[in-house]
Length: 217
Image 1: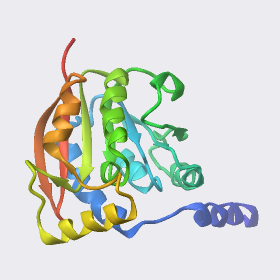
Image 2: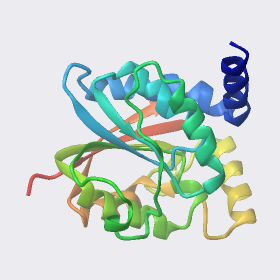
Image 3: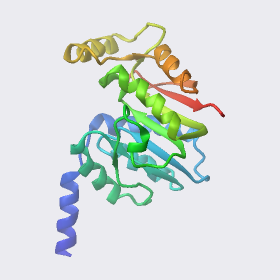
Image 4: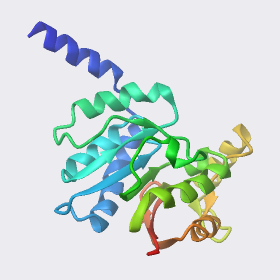
């Protein structure tokens, strides 16, 4: 009993919790539930899983979907694993290291995913990562497969409200290669890879969830 308690405490210490991720997971789930049938088995790849707290939460709501978390930051792996160990549904795989700018053959995953999920990556990475995301996800996603991308976005050159404008300015001051992306630019990159924007959901905290679909070849 003492050993079990010690292991549980050790696991708790490894788990990183981001309050914003905890808040936003409910809104993202509402979108996922509109497009993923929980009764049909499937596979979902999450690109840039961060702490792992959202991935495990979503997995608990879709027990027939096998979730594959991933990260490029090594320091996040222990947190993702710690959350996955506690997942009651046991449908979360060990995380893999993924750089979206590399060939998917190097990712160590299958090439038959039904869904891809990405939360809050585009605006904190160079535009090459957005391009690489669509280019390489198109290779591992089934025809008619769906991609979900969440975060702040501009649209047709317009970014609102002022808080998002200030946020974008702050990001670009820290790294000129990063910043809030425009949906129309992303559509262009996606379309070149056979991925089409289906619907835009306006969500709380001035964020959006975009749902994309890979065309049938």
